Amino acid sequence: MGYKHLQFPENSVFLVTGGAGFIGSNLCEAILDMGYTVRCLDNLSTGKKSNMDGFIDNPRFTFIEGDIRDLDTCMKACEGVDFVLNQAAWGSVPRSIEMPLLYEDINIGGTLNMMEAARQQGVKKFVYASSSSVYGDEPNLPKKEGREGNLLSPYALTKRVDEEYGKLYKKLYGLDTYGMRYFNVFGRRQDPDGAYAAVIPKFLKQLINDEVPTINGDGKQSRDFTYIENVIEANLKACLASSDAAGEAFNVAYGGREYLIDIYYGLTKALGKNIEPNFGPDRKGDIKHSNADISKAKELLGYDPDYSFERGIKLAIEWYKENL
Image (cartoon, one colour):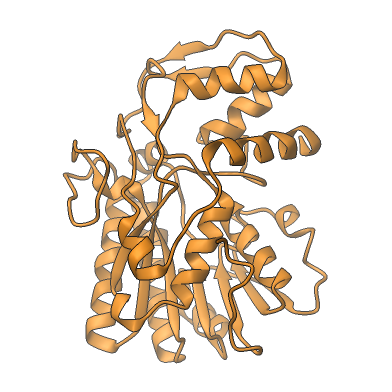
């Protein structure tokens, strides 16, 4: 269960791109806690230096301020690295609809630079962030790898292209790539601010401040909300996975299904608040229901998530109460 028992060669060096972001900073911290060396590459466009406060002074940690859109930077960052965890990307479906060119540039061009640098520098494993948005309008639940629909946003397209490059880099160059199709990750250090903030931290911050949150749509949309610890486990297990499993993408989720309106009232109850939400229009490009079949990751990566939504949300609420 979990990842803390996992063993890597003792001098292993990990590069986490986007390591000042929500998922990236949690990965950096977990790997440092396990006793390994971590390098972080981030241009701080969406990540924050404060996310690294807990480990920036660790002698086994190096922060490189740089951009994955620059191949030279990627090449230098990958020097002497065993495992790359490529989390650097711009998220948010609605923002990608407004800025398709930027998403192409960062999420496709940047990821390709990183794969190429990893290949040239002899990196052992290249694990990268994909997204459940690649399922598009495919209506069946649970979502299963190999059964994807029409894409609904530039963001989803960038992640699908990354997966195709991952497949090609395995086939053409023998680089072991593993795509992590994240389903609605939440937990400590997720940014509650801004127009495109994820829903759980946004609701928490607004409720803690006695503000009235707005739910997009009717609140009947469902998601496979996945606590950050499960995501760390999936990334690290992919670094130890067989070469036979490379070139593939895997659902990374808990395998549950929560309705937004239920989450909202659960949060008000946990915080002792009696605030009714506003309801706004549906978000463009959003998928109505999402729930993951995680059997492929279980079978090929040994993924065995032990943080249920209930367990994770309790920890998240505690963290935001202390840190907001």
